[in-house]
View (cartoon, rainbow, N blue to C red):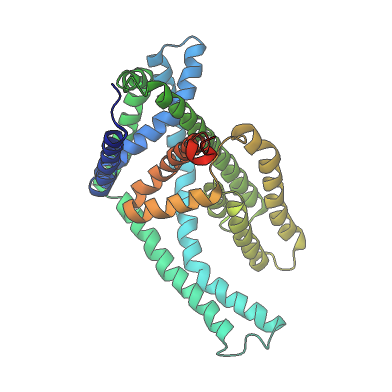
Length: 350
């Protein structure tokens, strides 16, 4: 006998409430485990492909672990110190850039930037605020990440959790499948497959796109000779999961820096502009259609709203679970919309 609808809503609502309470009260404790699960989910297709090539699950996991360790060591030795240094220097130099902008505009538009004018005051205020607030924020992030507890949590627990989950991923999924309520198991499996397709398209595909774009922007801007090219390119790639936002913000910052650094050298300025034009052309026509596809089903506004809400409520952990939760809600809403259009409420009694 089927469980009444009211009882089902009560149980599923209770499960959702428990999930939110755990995020609220145990966010810091759950953070390394959620990160480990995200890493394992991201790498599971790689392990599956290695298994198809003849490796066992243990050998595939060991191969992935060794490769990831080598990449991490190379990044830690070559890239991360430069990235941190450029980010700190960028925050420190912003007031002087604001002053240079003010002088540049004064020379060309003297009536707009008279001494004590609103625009000049605003430019100086923004520069000082970015230096103070941005520097404080960056120093806070660096200092908190450098604490012993955080280092242990992030650099020891996360890899260990990821390795164990990656090793047992298929068995874990099979075990969860065996616990599904028999009456709803087929529907839940279909929804889970759709959620997995959405998440894999977005997280794996978009994550790879961000990595490719960040690497391309950072290397290209450094080759042009742009100061802070590494951090600007990295930041532009990092926020490219929101369509056009990474290119717009990164492009504006890079072009602004290029105007101050290369003023009069229009070839270098044109190269900086061309880097972002070429990047967006390749990303929009080749990389994203190939790696992400058109079946993601996550509107940029939906992503921004979920990041804002979960980030505000649950901090950094909320940012990590925002996209998966948004994907789940999107799939469930589409499922309920389909049921609604088949119901008598929508079609009437005919």
